Length: 349
Image (cartoon, rainbow, N blue to C red; front, top):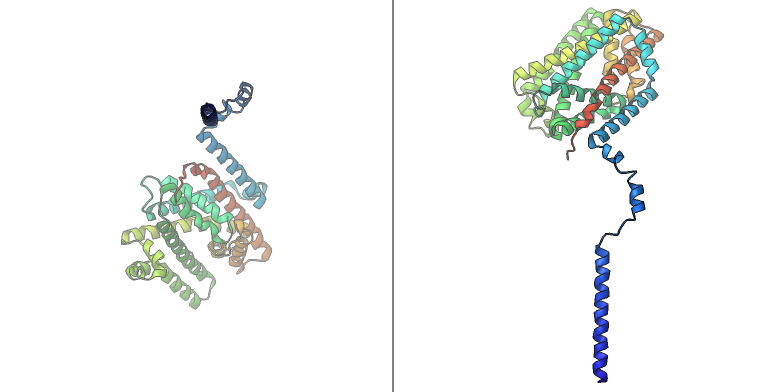
């Protein structure tokens, strides 16, 4: 009898333990009730404020913050009043001509990029122009040509372009730019050199102008050299495409250097050839690996080096600073217009 009672007590105890464990598990699985007062207080921070921040509105807010940071950066680097003061030094007609030539140069470069990169969808020339403006601003603001890396990145984020193609297109475009600037430099020197040296400068300029044709003819062999594969891969396969890219390159550079030369000629009173050397010197400094942030100092040094043939120090410095501020105002203003393009960048591996 005693044994039966003990067994019954054990079974009762075990049953109670099972019920307690089951109740504890159910309590852990059920969500904890939130007091009405707390829920009511949290509703102040949820709708309608949180619902109003749609993805598009959040992107717009981020874009606004980026634009404000960009404006503050320009103010810190050179100051907006200085940019406006530099523009007011020129006549309205000259300033309008400068802006039109610069915009024409950008448009031609965008058309060249649009045609060189096969993975840019057709009908996206305007997008190419805005990406080019953003890339140009990154080049200006970042030191040591680090901004160059932004072009393959922008092409990949916007169009899904491969890193290899983006990098090879960038290298090819820079080869075209360098050959054009070097050839124009030698041609500009012809008016300032003795006859024999002028003839050598002309021959050197002609030789540099033919450099892309040499790369075109040697494209097949260059593709077999690992170190030159990146350059050779972007060299056009058809002569018609090469001629188009060369025409766009020369037209873009002539328009840009004409704008620079006109400003320097008015500010310094130098002959056209000397002013053109100053323009080439300033712009060539942006193609070199020791480019300073915003071109501060390096651009002026390039202009003064080109003008040093016929100009004194003070005259060269004043013209170089004014031209640099005009260039910054144009390039950074175009980049500011292009900031909404950042909305459309997609995440790519």
